[in-house]
Image 1 (spheres, helix red, strand yellow):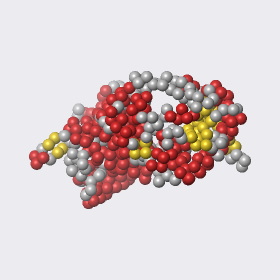
Image 2: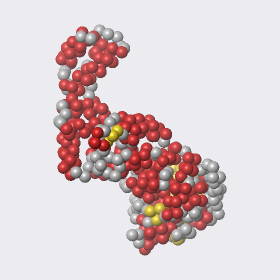
Image 3: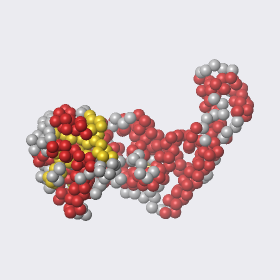
Image 4: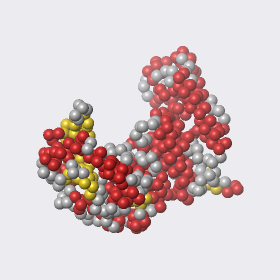
Length: 483
């Protein structure tokens, strides 16, 4: 439970930090109001790391820039039309220690929305209180006036913070009508903060879900990415599914609710997929502590089984199968991420992981030959470490003996990969002869036949390991003469 007293102490610490104090002093000397607003106030009160310094002021963009320039090592005004000026501010304290932070300061806003697009008619406001009332949620509608250190909370954000509630400053119908993207933000904050949306917020999300269609795919992508980047994305994803919003922005996910897991270990493949996502995040944290969230891995974990609805078959004895769901799922993942305007590398990587995620399960039935291990590494390429985590995360069985058997089998596979990598440099596996040498040996010019010979030598290399140039040359000539 959040302690109000402790939260106020944290706000005082934030206000007295070197960069905040320097900026506050400069604006006060220039005769302008200034307040920390939104995320930094909320996060400071929760004891979370404050990563952004967002301010609001009654100063105009030109006036903001005039105050910031003397103390800024860099500044930018790409958000000037929306009243926002950014700067890098560096302050040296009394002990000679430098403190640097990026700050963004926005003129009080009083925007209006037309209800057709989510682009506001930008208008600057007159008071801090009016600026706060137009924001998305009450816990983001608090401000800390500085340098006097006065908390401004016109919508009851402190009470909601203490109760861990997500509530809108105005009615949720009006708030979501102004900007439907706020419905996705509700899901993100449910996961990021662990807060519960109020009943009227959930009802408004259900009633207004169709309006999400006016939001650009790029903005939807950004919010879904932020949701998946949280440590506990399940709550937000379930909220999107339960309100019907996922049907419009990520329809492959709710579709999984209709597909019972073939082993009946989960209520459905939907719940299984959420569990795999959670476990993948766990492996990510344990193997790469402190690193940024791996969205490629997380998308692959969430989407790894989306091919099952299209491949479901019921056989004798009501046995359910999903043959080739990995291949179908890879195509569907590519299609969805393309629709969300992801970059080509992300799309390709996620689709490849989905395609490969079932490859390992034959290993537990019998030890692979070295050639199969080499192909596993070759096919995964730079995605090998992610594939390790995805495959391990996909084991959600409640049968401890089976889980242990699969875990031990993958331990063995990883160890064999390490050993072969040390012996053969598997990541850069190449035939013993390159394209130029193939042309010399066979006496042919560049063309299709060189590529064909190269691929044959590569398969030979994967099957038998390094042969050496002399043996590879002999085998190539035998193959060429027998064609």
